[in-house]
Amino acid sequence: MYQSPYPSIEIPDTPLVPYVFQRAAALADKPALICGASGRQLTYGQLEKAIRQVACGLHAHGIRKGDVVGLVCPNVPDFAVVFYAVTTLGAICSTVNPIATAEEIGAQFADSEAVMLVTIPDLFEKCSAAARLASTVREIVVMGEVDGSTPYATLFTHGDAPPHVDINPAVDVCVLPYSSGTSGIPKGVMLTHRNLVANLAQCSAVGVGVNEQDVLLGVLPFFHIYGMVVIMGGALVQGATIVSLPRFELEQFLSVIQTRRITYANLVPPIVLALAKHPLVASYDLSSLRMILSGAAPLGAELADACAARLGCMVRQGYGLTETSPVTHFHPLESDVVDGGSVGPAIANTECRLVDPATSDDVAEGERGELWIRGPQVMKGYFNKPEATAACMTDDGWFKTGDVAVIDGRGWYSIVDRVKELIKYKGLQVAPAELEAVLLSNPLIADVAVIPVPDVEAGEVPKAFVVARGELSADQVMAFVAERVSPYKKVRQVEFVEAIPKSPSGKILRRLLVDRERAKQQS
Ligand code: 4UU
Figure 1 (cartoon, rainbow, N blue to C red):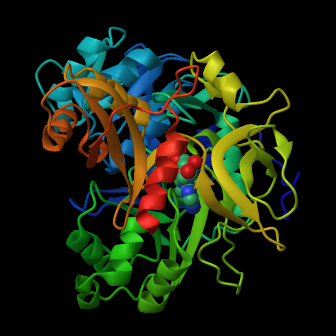
Figure 2: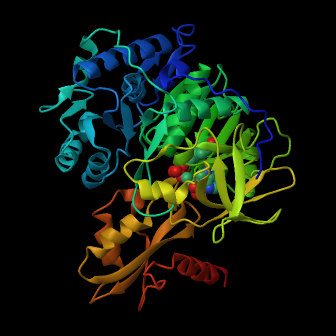
Figure 3: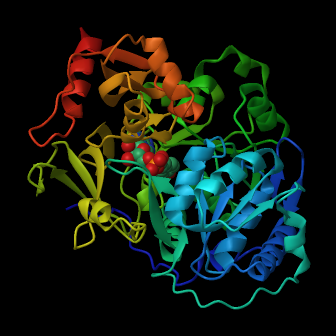
């Protein structure tokens, strides 16, 4: 077992909102969030008041402690208003990718038993269709005015003093993002107020390096744990300013860094790649950038160095999972040993084990093993899925990440492989089991297995091994999936095979397919 090299910290015993907004009163006139597309701006004072008003409005519309409210919204300043208003009431915010299909959104909110959805006008139609699949949803609130919905503005008409709610930070669930974990389809990840407060406090303690003077770029989606906690929470708790962008588009992204004098950018490896290599980058003044943090997928040392050299700024890497709120490892800012390929040591209050997944024994010093984590940021469990929870959490509090890591002499970790099913497309989760279920609904497909294959731009893309039952082309297979899933989940390679390798118990032997694919790449 390995302890964090950092001194332990006391985790504040408070719900999320008072923790995040502890400095809001002192910074009342300072911009908290600015929309990089429309220019709409909320100061800390306006944001804090809007959160209280919307909390009153949600309460007037029947939202109570423990209720799940679904948020289907791109990165706009009001995302933060709704997010923190819901959690003010002790209700639970479940976020989803706004580009998801109606079926995907419906499936998530049926599973989470959401009672209300909050969305934007452009997504109302899709949310209505989703709500027909999720029978618990009784109201849709739209940031604007659309027939058949509750206008967001009406939530502001019920005063600004929300009722007091008793929140037990260690027990009460605060957010419910979805993750497929080590196998199967996406599951609701129950993160408590304490989980999120702990992770924000842990990140400050190890010097993630955001300070009050920083202007952060909020281009990674707030619905995902990285945007939700590391960007939105991490910036607001320090009293920094976030410039949000509803989507990634290279020219707008570069122009916003230049005009808004962005100092700190939280990114994923494909965007770091564009910054290191794309010719357009040379046409912009990006000299305000002092720090780039990459996470959600592996960042190679070469790419980190190339980006740092071209822009003259620090490039660091964090590691973690939705199930760990998310940060467990962070590459220290102050360190002069620039080792871009490592994710650094474990952050404060975080214990690690490297384990042989077959035996659950710790591996020998210096060997690779499955990374297990114990700490205050580890989730309470999956919502309504006790078996899935038991499969990845031990009785004594260890969470099994499904990632394979090694630790070096300094106590720094590198993520070297994955034993779980997950595919990461540009840092976003794609669950093989979900794509396999879609493919099996095609009568011309007898059997199928989906695995990740490496891709220079996206990191990984899904590849399907298909046993066909009749005339079927690779293009037809890809089109069939593309019509039924979010664009980022598309199957991008297909290989027809005679049979899918399976264990005697019928489990797909993915590892065999992954190894075969790797051998092919190397030859
Ligand atoms: C190799 O993507 C995330 C969390 C992202 C994050 C964490 C700490 C961003 C910034 C930060 O400081 O969560 P999920 O649940 O979407 O995906 C988790 C999986 C991990 O299990 C691992 O396989 O994403 C992969 N992953 C990484 N892999 C996440 N970060 C890394 C990394 N290197 N740095």
